[in-house]
Amino acid sequence: MSAAPGDGAGEEIRAATVLPARRSDVELHTADGVTLVGELALPAERDPVATLVTLHPLPTAGGFMDSHVLRKASYRLPALADLAVLRFNTRGTTSPRGTSGGTFDAGGAERYDVAAALEFAEFSGLPHVWLLGWSFGTDLALVHGRDPLVEGLILLSPPLRWSAPADLVAWGETGLPVTALVPEFDDFLRPAEARERFRLLPQAEVVAVEGAKHLWVGEAAVRRVLDEVVARVNPARAPLPTRWP
Image (cartoon, rainbow, N blue to C red; front, side, top):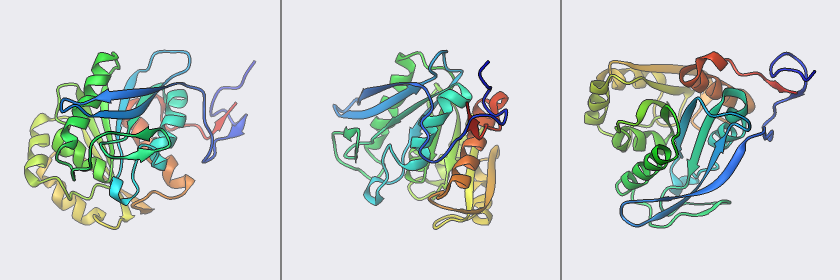
């Protein structure tokens, strides 16, 4: 009989581990005529119970759909937590998957990119959609992610750079769950200031992560992020196992 994930048997899940999933290259088509490249990862043998639509860090600073936390989410969470993970390159962004059309617009025209991803999720019948943004992607989520399909936000290292106080107020009015994971040593927004600025969004949960930095470097940091994500999106599967049979 095969071992169950997390029972102490099997191989340790490491930085480069890729667990079983149904993975397919996808294209998203925006309302302003841009084609975006991406990937959808689904549980290998069952339907997903919830969906993460991921929004990557700033492309002009090296962010793309393969930024490591988002890549590892797609490598692990379909198998470990029964989640669908949609990753894509925003306009003008290149990764090994390819280059999305259009030109980087500092969060402006990217509203069409967020809308295209949500439309894809809806058309594909993906359940219980959450936005998972990282850095620049958190601002895209806050500014452009208020959509009837979205059930909650998870924000990794939110800089609150392109979003405005009015965006926080508007999210507060939705009543939807919002979690901000804020590294102790973040380059842009640290926990004390984050708590103050997120007061405009009453239901926001600001989680200070000791020892972490903006880029969530290291396996311990990645595991903490993925555990926090799963605890909110599919709590029955948290905490995640560290071994796979």
